[in-house]
Image 1 (spheres, rainbow, N blue to C red):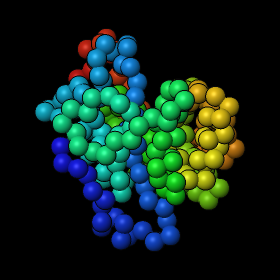
Image 2: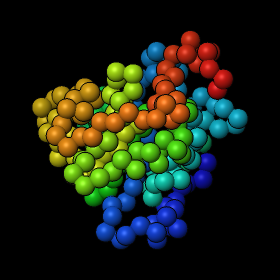
Image 3: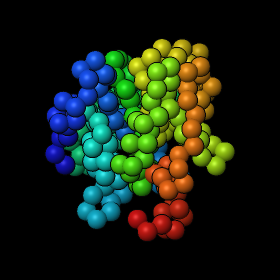
Image 4: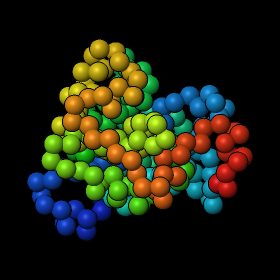
Length: 203
């Protein structure tokens, strides 16, 4: 897979004072329920990691991978999880530290139905005073696939310093906007993380 570069036409259309948009794909999990690396599952000749990266590249200026998992043929820049942190927050915090003045779109590696429409919906929820946009679907917060403004980064640092690793803690922070995506977009947030779920889907 070729390294993804910033979408120059998109950058030129945005006011120069707006932060860059960085897509962050987390691959640091053990995939214990699936039994093998989920992001390397292939569909139509491309891995889930490659497919997710290509979709993110349509709205992001940079796309990076965070975690130590095998990347296959993907040649995207890779960041390491923050040492001493546990779970996905370690990867999210790593991206925030690497791109301190950016908007981060963070996503898990096991959402094969991520779509451009879902990403555009996330971006459309940005408003002054909203430090993060976390979707809420069927009674659950979905912090991965979600949007985090640079104004939110200090709160994540605070959680890490308190060793609060649960992603659900992110939705409790002041300035977070919780919203339900339209029904037609909700498949983008569907996790496929076990062999049974994989066998049930046309993937």
